[in-house]
Image 1 (cartoon, protein in one colour):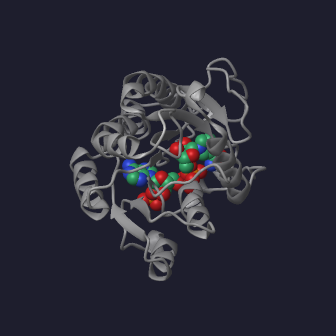
Image 2 (spheres, rainbow, N blue to C red):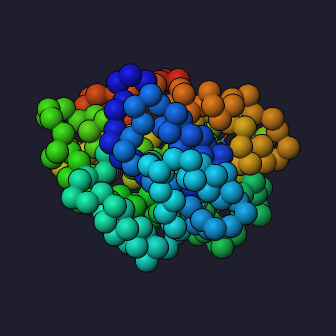
Amino acid sequence: MAGLRVCSLLVTGANRGIGLGLVQHFLRLPNPPQWVFAGCRDPKGQRAQELQNLASKHPNLVIIPLEVADPTSIKAAAASIEGRLGGSGLNLLINNAGIAKINLLENETLKDMTEIYTTNTAGPLLMGQAFLPLLKKAAQGSPGSELSCSKAAIVNMSSIGGSIASAFGWDLIQATSYRCSKAALNMLTKCQSLAYKEHGVFCVALHPGWVQTDMGSSGGHTPPVTVDDSVKGMLKVLSSLSEKDTGTFLDWEGNVVPW
Ligand code: NDP
């Protein structure tokens, strides 16, 4: 990932799964970012243990309390990160936090549909709004006019499950609320790319593969892709993207995923 050089980034849902893997990879780089902000909704809890251990070894890792379904929490996180950055911008926002429920279509409820949409779709929308000033600042502070993930970018962690064109596997999982939330996240990504282009902010939706995490393994399946391989793949893809790719939907191997 020689091409991806960021001074600062924020990953949401960073205490486990793919989010934690992303944080670990950035910290291990030969030239790690100056700031790695790890959003976590319960920073002092048991589920943040690995993140706390990492933070005790890496002074550039800052754990930020962040509940993406709560606008007040998002605003507080943006203010806290702005303070840490001391006048600099934020290069990369990775909207990774997400939830899923493996409901059969007939068992979907208003509560599940609303909860999943709030976290997976409204969360990234509000995050984009709250962090736009810092992303703009990063874009203005980076040389060159071309959009890129090194300059200023929003990466929305989507899923092939949200692809209408490749909807299949209904026998395995239905998870309609989750699929709808990711299809809507894809549209959000396109809208963000159009609106934020003039501010120098690149936007992309990524499918991380079927990955060995709590979410990936729910339903009793063993996913084929390790967190490590998914994260390495996605960072390689991000490093290769240029302005023409803003507003696209790609997978962890760089393939275009049909909407
Ligand atoms: P996990 O379930 O392993 O982890 C989810 C993370 O999101 C946890 O850190 C969790 O925090 C956090 N989170 C959930 N809700 C919120 C919230 N409201 N506010 C803040 N943080 C929250 O999932 P994965 O790592 O597998 O998934 C990461 C992303 O990748 C998701 O967006 C998912 O949809 C997507 N994805 C995953 C695939 C897979 O195969 N694993 C396939 C396709 C897409 P906490 O510990 O507090 O619950």
